[in-house]
Length: 252
Image 1 (spheres, one colour):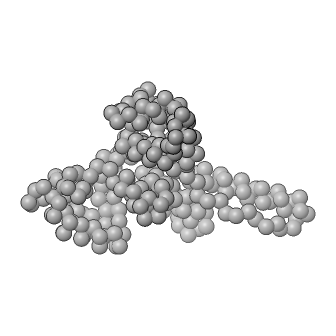
Image 2 (tube, rainbow, N blue to C red):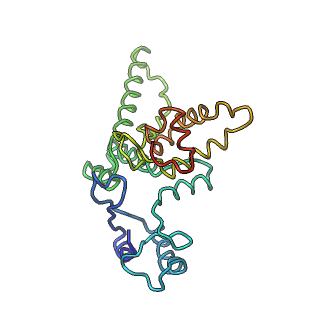
Image 3 (cartoon, rainbow, N blue to C red):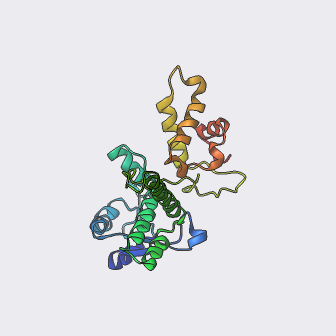
């Protein structure tokens, strides 16, 4: 996004972007914020932006999002993950957040609190596949079917229901990765390298050193949140992880 779009964001609450992961499918993405975020955004544009900008008078085509030293910030998603890691000690990606939006709107449609058109609009604005919401629907329906079967075996007497199913985390590898699943060679992203190095540092001891890569691979495969970050080719073997730990690794 460019600096000139800040007026549109403040005036109508949204603007469009065309440089994002699913651009080939969705063409444009709506960048939206509510009143609370709007207050912070106004502070950013009127005060902070001019403090770090490398130009005295920002131009229309200048990047909208800047780092603390005035460089263009091209990966807002990593800042979202870093916020949750620093403040709450949990790993959440923007894909996980979109998944929550998808499953919540699916539940609202089922409860009759929103219309089919509103549900479709959420998916369209989310620029996210409805597969995750459909998976959640299938799991929920299966839970209800099991409940009815248990009641049948109990002679029609209602039995306590199981706890509600939590919204599922993405199960497809590489949802946040810029390379598709069918490529022969996938780039190692900064997010992949950062995650891998953190896991490596956390697990490495004198005792674990001989099998550190196996332990790292297991940890990544067991973490549902890691699936969105890592390309499927990068979690096929320990050899792939070894390449990712190399500072200059780019593709494998």
